Image 1 (cartoon, rainbow, N blue to C red):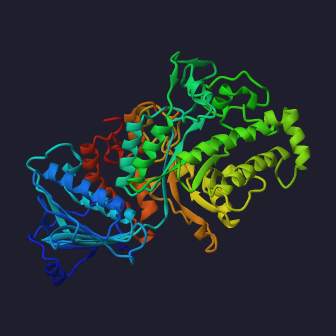
Image 2 (cartoon, helix red, strand yellow; image 1 turned 90 degrees about the vertical axis):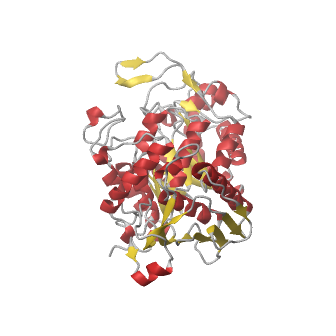
Image 3 (cartoon, rainbow, N blue to C red; image 1 turned 180 degrees about the vertical axis):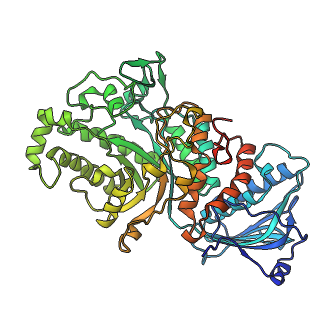
Length: 548
């Protein structure tokens, strides 16, 4: 049974008190839990904004809303800290679920209730999508009919974790570009930004205890051209960039004001060649190392046999915890070749000292990685934090309390949930947004390969093949956007949108509310919004291919 629109009987439509017989379409993404439509509209130019009992952060957002109403409509929208019967009103109702809200629009007012900041902020995103798309432009908008459809909405999310990943390690994104990414995440009610801040090709976060991480590790001497692995071809252009700690704090605060928690990733013990270029003594061979100029998986990893490696990791993670208040810290754990450990006397001595053995389908070197993971988990745990790692951390023995991010398909997530670990589903065959999104790939920007169209994103079932006992361990869903072959903001946005809109419905909507044809019909309005807001987006769903 589809529950995405429940039309009101005429008597209830009259009760909403709407002022005109014609109602605009309801095109909100992600689709709210319950939508009851009336007839007619509410004309809101010059409407006051009132609130009562909300926290300071919510009050600040509502004051910003009133200011923007004034600018866009050309009529002053005064603010009241006492609830008014007319205009936009926002009041606290503790019974509304976390991040949820109710919205009632009549011919005279628009009323919102929520129990927390995120609920009020999510309600604003719905209201804005119900506005004419011109709302998302800049400066005064002339000739726009500023009306809301009369509607009653009750809404709440399906999953608490609704993530999107961003990779500045391969190609760097400025603070302003990152904020623009956060803005569109907030519009579609995502609430976790997974920020991939370190990799073989670049270290992107200032660590004061280890200044060479950015002095040396943030700059590669060139970048491989397309897929010219053998023979290798580089572009001859030095490439770099990093975020100062003040810039990190700025982004974290900006995201928090939009209901988004930033989860940092420091990938370990592999994908560390940029760090080794800065501190070669942390590797098994002692180097020298260069920040990697090619794509793929480097064999150069942190030496797990020496204590200074753990001192280094704890020093880095201590500063990361100071910068990021998130409960979770992502420690990577993926694609860590073991060839250096197999040949390293210190790593082999550590293996013997720990009594690690081959067996049960795992090598002693894989178990050494378990040891690295458990030490970082214990260290972070002492500071009240939890780890997330890619599904490779399941290999061997994983300490209880870790959270698994399943990227190599859904199998790792299914295994982890079955073993009692919490899981974020992010399978590459559904949610790798660096994959092509049309079948006419020769007309799309050059990419890594693969094929994940918007329909495929939309079709994912986070609970498929899970037992009832395992389902509560699925915290939510995330998509990943790796940027080896994505070097411009326009290309980044093109790969993100509208697939992130489809992702948002997988994350937010009750299963019975998901309907691809209804979603597709809403994409036209969303496309108008994205155009007004200055985003580049893929229009293949409408038969258009390539950057427009």
